[in-house]
Length: 394
Ligand SMILES: Cc1cc2nc3c(=O)[nH]c(=O)nc-3n(C[C@H](O)[C@H](O)[C@H](O)COP(=O)(O)OP(=O)(O)OC[C@H]3O[C@@H](n4cnc5c(N)ncnc54)[C@H](O)[C@@H]3O)c2cc1C
Ligand SMILES: NC(=O)C1=CN([C@@H]2O[C@H](COP(=O)(O)OP(=O)(O)OC[C@H]3O[C@@H](n4cnc5c(N)ncnc54)[C@H](OP(=O)(O)O)[C@@H]3O)[C@@H](O)[C@H]2O)C=CC1
Ligand SMILES: O=C(O)C(=O)Cc1c[nH]c2ccccc12
Image 1 (cartoon, protein in one colour):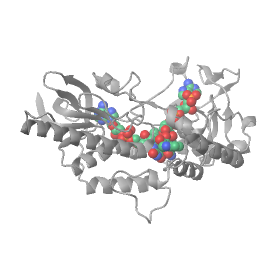
Image 2: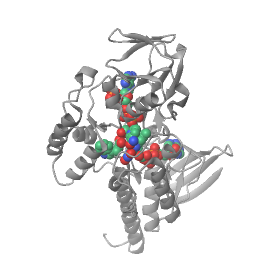
Image 3: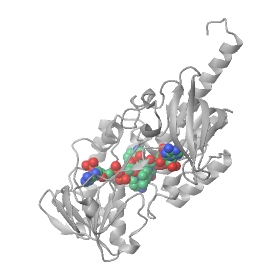
Image 4: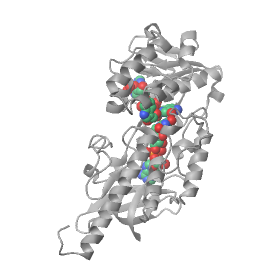
């Protein structure tokens, strides 16, 4: 078996992994980056619908040491964001090892090291790495989630998860049901309408509807004001912008949008035009839950029934780091998310860290990367000093 010793292993080369790699390189800390796909930032490059653009203003979407250029637009397109990431990777000479799917990581108490096993998916064999520090950067979105609905297995139409949805080009004139009204579901419903299909969207919970400008304003206000104040202002502006949507089956939650993002990780919907299409009747809201599926027919809890040609599951993602990280309890809870609360979420025990699991998007990933590299650097310096001056009480 192939075994390599290394100071730090980072698992995942999304924005969190590459930002951590850059921060470690700045401190000359040797590390490797293991990635199961054939490219970095695969979520953005491969698993995003064509219409996806950044929701947050560029000042909240940069990685450490490299702000976006002053000439780039405030809201970047996906292509512009990928160009930025490409130049980042080139500048910091980041070299992930691709086709390495990490399948196990255990802590060896005696050796005080992490033993990480990665399946080399091209060659078919398992590679083993031993590291003092292990950084989980596999993302909040490492596995797509599809609910278990009675009858789904024998549904006679086509199903697709938002992770694999590209555009509505092949669904013209089709009746399409979008399940889930997060940002993916709302944008996909809009996209389907633009491509000439007949979308309906399942909205089972209250949601905040904002737009990019309102979120940008709120994010800047949060730097100086408490979240309750920001939420009061932004929800008033939300009402002015969209009015009462209850007749369309859309209700606001009783807590504010930034409170819900910070505490529960629920992002508000950033409207790209879907709401107007709902008001126009071009996109139908089904304010209920699916009860069961029979052949092509979907039966809802409000007793509505309708046949659909296609179902798009925009039902979100899960972190599944607990599947491969056998000793996950050093940093994660059973849901694969940090067990410590923000802002202490990124640091675990025994040299284990997590980056990008604070539900704060690219901005959160950057902050985690900087904190992790600083902490690893301090720990290494302390060990080195202790080795040089073993008798001193440092
Ligand atoms: C559709 C969509 C749009 C979004 N838009 C925004 C936005 O506009 N602004 C914003 O701030 N945030 C946005 N987000 C949030 C998103 O989580 C971040 O943008 C960002 O991609 C998170 O980076 P990450 O590196 O933590 O995770 P990811 O980008 O998910 O990267 C994780 C990487 O780890 C790899 N990996 C996973 N498991 C393993 C394993 N076992 N072995 C090896 N490799 C593994 C994956 O292949 C992947 O490349 C969006 C999310 C989605 C789903
Ligand atoms: N341009 C951008 O920047 C974009 C950003 N994103 C971000 O990516 C992340 C993931 O977003 P997204 O993919 O939308 O996932 P989310 O987890 O945000 O949304 C999932 C949605 O599916 C609903 N849902 C789950 N199960 C069911 C069910 N059985 N029946 C009906 N509804 C169900 C949820 O409802 P409930 O709340 O009731 O559980 C929720 O509305 C978010 O942080 C989002 O903001 C996504 C797209 C675009
Ligand atoms: O799109 C997301 O889910 C993100 O994580 C980006 C984000 C970080 N902070 C926010 C506050 C309001 C809306 C989106 C985000």
